[in-house]
Each structure stands twice: as C-alpha cells, then as structure tokens.
Picture 1 (tube, one colour):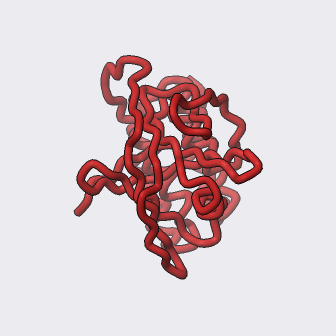
Picture 2 (tube, helix red, strand yellow):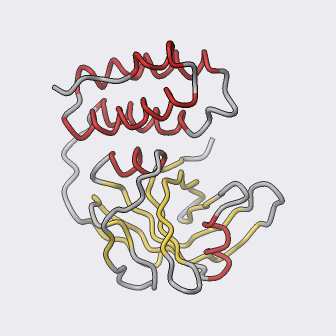
Picture 3 (tube, helix red, strand yellow):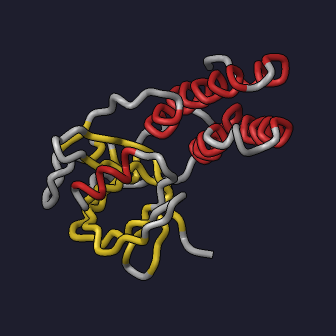
Amino acid sequence: MPLILETIVTTASADGVLHLVPFGLIREGEDFWVAPFRPSPTIANLEAVPVFAAVAPADVRVIAGCVTGRRDWATVPCRTIPVPRLAEAYGHMELQVVEVRDDPVRPRFRGRVVHAESHRPFLGHNRAVNAVLEAAILSTRLHRLAPETVLAELRHHRIAVEKTAGPAEREAWNWIAAKVAAALPQAAAASLAIDDA
C-alpha cells in the first residue's frame, strides 16, 4: 500500500480563481500523485495551470470546513509557483505536474516537488485532530457507505474528541456532525455533536 499524506491542496484556474480542497497525496518515490474524481475543479485547474501547492494544515478546521462548505481560508503566495497556499500550515510543498494519466473516472496527476518549506514546529499529535480527519473523510462518503457503518465509526471517533479536543477541534467536529445529521436520519445522527467545553 502506498503512503498517503492528508493535505490541503491549492490549484488555480487559467484566470487565477483559487480552489482549495483536502486531498490525500499518494507518494511514489519522491513524487506525489493527486487523483481527483470527475467532475472536479482540480482537474480543470491542473490541466490549465499544471502546478499545485500542498500543505500540512496547522488547524484541522480547514479540513472540516472544506468538506462542510467553508472554503474561505487565508492564503499566501508560494515562492516558486503562481498558485497561493494555505497560510496556516506546519509546512508546504510546491509541485509541478510532470505526468498525467487520464481516466474517465479518476485521472491522476504526478507532482514533482520544486520547493518545500517548514513554517512552524510540529510539537505532537492530538487524537481529536486525527478523529476529525477521519470524520471529515467519512462525511465525503455518505453516498457510498451504509449509514450504520458511518454512524458506528463516527461514534467511535467521537470518544477521542470528547477526551482530547480543544475548542478548534470541537468546532470542527460539530461542523461535520451537523453535515452528517442533515444527510442521515436525525435520530441516529443528532447524538454526534459535542457540547462546548
């Protein structure tokens, strides 16, 4: 199995419109593949402007926000490519597309790192951040997974959030809980939200 890094990827259209989205980058050697499902603005952007930035976000609310319709996050210019990156990051990579594997469902774009930089120290893992990340991924698969499976997994991840979350992680979790509650039967999903500490 390949190593997959959960990141925030930014791409831009030919006229400079930014698209910011969570993406699992698939590592192959020193390169990273982006494999978006059609339809996706990322595909059109990479075809028009074949570069992208990928960051390790310093705030899990960015990931939760993107999957719940909150995409207005601060960005800053990259050093070597004409696409901005997420501002609040532990570090980032700037990548040039060097290969495209077309596919009617899920094309793949191989990115080669042209610049990488650290921005702040990473001082340790927090279980609530990992739980929010898993919940965010689950929330994008509501149409493919059985509701019982989604709810069972979310209830399990909720424990880590209850025990270890700070305010940002609780807020991120509750955004996802609200999305799931709106999509699945209210009685089962309503119990996912967590009260403010």
